[in-house]
Image 1 (cartoon, rainbow, N blue to C red):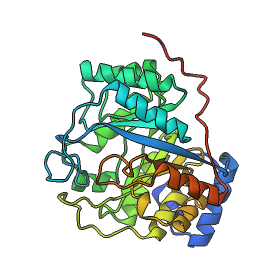
Image 2 (cartoon, rainbow, N blue to C red; image 1 turned 90 degrees about the horizontal axis):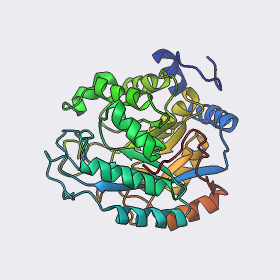
Image 3 (spheres, rainbow, N blue to C red; image 1 turned 180 degrees about the vertical axis):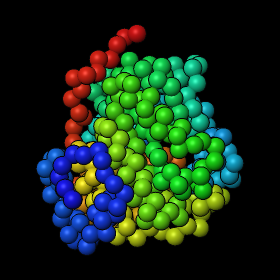
Length: 334
């Protein structure tokens, strides 16, 4: 088995063997790969903004924003551009280099709301920040419009394995998700795609999801590893917490099979101690989401704030990574 080499032909049994490596050896191997392809002293700090909250027609069993479930999230209209710009400016002042905009849509529609999102993307990009969007399914033409606006990345998670997927979601297929990723690949926009731990999936489901991602050519530039936030009112509200050991194995395995990708310690980080987060960084995670309001996307997903994260990074001797240089992107005034 090759470690520290970029490849796109990973077999599921090979990835399972990586996942099952004795934990300390696995972390050591992942840390070695991480240092080969990344600056281990840098962590990218991201800010996620819910630009349109709640009222989503889909039935994702984990999601507080589905209109099918009674949760504490209340539907809100698309934010105005100035509000988004102000949130982004505050984030930039705190060292954030990537702003992600999420809208609770099933798919992008060619209408005035999408036009407003394009304006948001352009204005935040012009601030010198990386901009990521997660807006649901989109066509190649819509991806090209986002590219023209200056979008750096598009997030579209697989969530879990293809076999387990229909247990969690019935309103969109696995193929739909892969198709959106392929549409993004018709542009220079980078791909952000990962999954969620704690949905009731097996280890083989986790490995199968990683295999799907690791056999995409190229690999997603970003791979978020989310930990389920159990939301009251959703079908998964009583799921048990994911052990830290499982989180470490998933991060380390993702690092080894996709060496050049950013592995993002995403939702659910708030329940991890500083020591546990340090182990995640050792295992290859090199990005976190921080906040100004102690929530990651909605009130149901707690998130550490900028000051707490700065304190942790200082304690660990880590620095915030600046925005990526983007030679292939030219924001236009159109």
